[in-house]
Image (tube, rainbow, N blue to C red; front, side, top):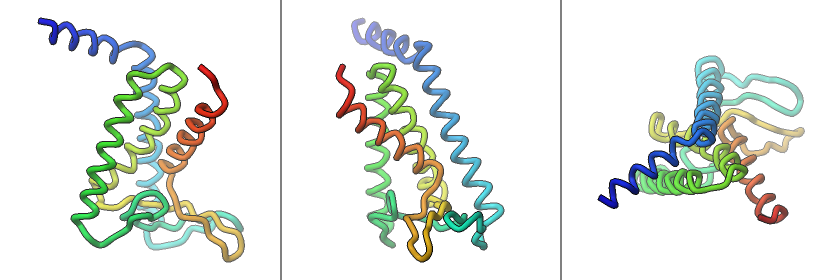
Length: 166
């Protein structure tokens, strides 16, 4: 009986108005990322699209994690990394539901982007990266819209952790 009461309380806390708002925010970020990637995959898959002297769209398929780290041709290693990402994403979702409003906003940004990249890992067995920032011959790591949200969320989390007292 206590178990069912706890499940009912959990369901009610998940369906709180603020959680619904932030879950919609996560879905919007996910679809912004999907939209950008599908456009690039369909329109620029074989070409580099020149925007200006500092940015190009150049589709590459990243089988590693952020910035191509841990890239390997081993499907076992790829699957282990994907499983670890799923675990981290699950933990983030759990933390999200047990956080204060400002933290929910920050975790929403991270989860929205991470979900987009995780979807690609499952669907394509790689993540399409296409934003190529450069200056002359120096090129930053190629990234995507999901990476922008993940990085922004992590930076917001760090700033909040160091500078905002509860």
